Image 1 (spheres, protein in one colour):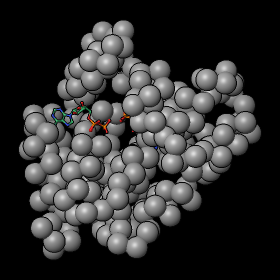
Image 2 (cartoon, rainbow, N blue to C red):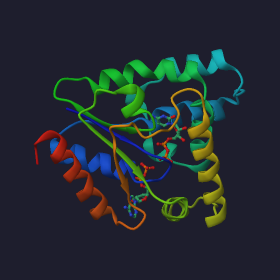
Image 3 (cartoon, rainbow, N blue to C red):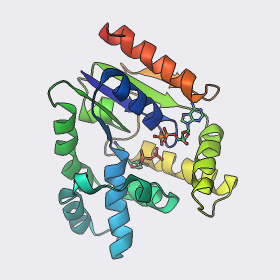
Image 4 (cartoon, rainbow, N blue to C red):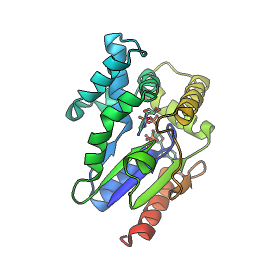
Length: 209
Ligand SMILES: Nc1ncnc2c1ncn2[C@@H]1O[C@H](COP(=O)(O)OP(=O)(O)O)[C@@H](O)[C@H]1O
Ligand SMILES: Nc1ccn([C@@H]2O[C@H](COP(=O)(O)OP(=O)(O)O)[C@@H](O)[C@H]2O)c(=O)n1
């Protein structure tokens, strides 16, 4: 059973994906971390975002077992991730490992932008998680400021709007709700309500509760 969770920045995809994975006893892959890892390396090595062959090589040589989620969840790395994610050669280098993860025996939960549309269009359960930009920015502001990042509510909102715009308008695997995905708008839902909604959708699609 493949469960695909997509949605814009800081919508609560990871929260829903982790809860579904724990509930059904499935492995979970946060695919945003793959793009974040490539983006972080571009920043660390001072590479040019226009150097497509170098960025594609980085993506192809990514060591997925060594991803440091904590270090990758910063504002600048999110921005760099969305810039490398526009490059078709970078996306292509990351496709096989995501598909292999999705198709492992027993199934898996993946969250990202293109899971239900490109990586696993055959997924049994597809959920598109969203919330208003203001709600998402408030949650991300709380997260980043608690980690000591020098951000303001306005700077986080500006960054999220810019990243959403780039992710939705790119030619390669843009952020889009799959036609057969169920929408959860959690602007006015707390985490528990959002997870309960996702569990109900998964139960209806799979017959498993
Ligand atoms: N429904 C919700 N209501 C309030 N806060 C939420 C909700 N869902 C997630 N959060 C919080 O918002 C932040 C972003 O959630 P996360 O699941 O990491 O989003 P994403 O994976 O889409 O970036 C986290 O701090 C998380 O605890
Ligand atoms: N499947 C995916 C996952 C992430 N991404 C890119 O990676 C960036 C970071 O993704 P993320 O899921 O970690 O970002 P947040 O929603 O957690 O802020 C996004 O802005 C996208 O540009 C993508 O293109 N495709």
